[in-house]
Image 1: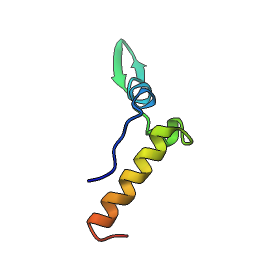
Image 2 (image 1 turned 180 degrees about the vertical axis):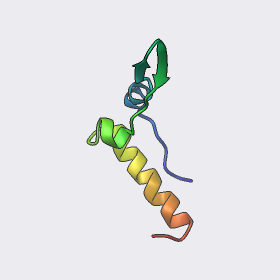
Image 3 (image 1 turned 60 degrees about the horizontal axis):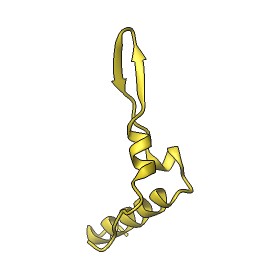
Image 4 (image 1 turned 120 degrees about the horizontal axis):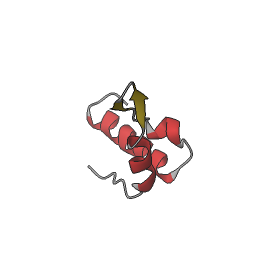
Length: 59
């Protein structure tokens, strides 16, 4: 694999989301593509996705 994800700050923020249900904290992560679609992290994930699709023969 050649694609690398360097920018991790936004990834951490979208994975830290929680939802309070009653007295419980439930993980409520959001895709980086929905959280900050124009961020460097989102662009790096798109490059990774394209590379994976090519390697498995779907692109």
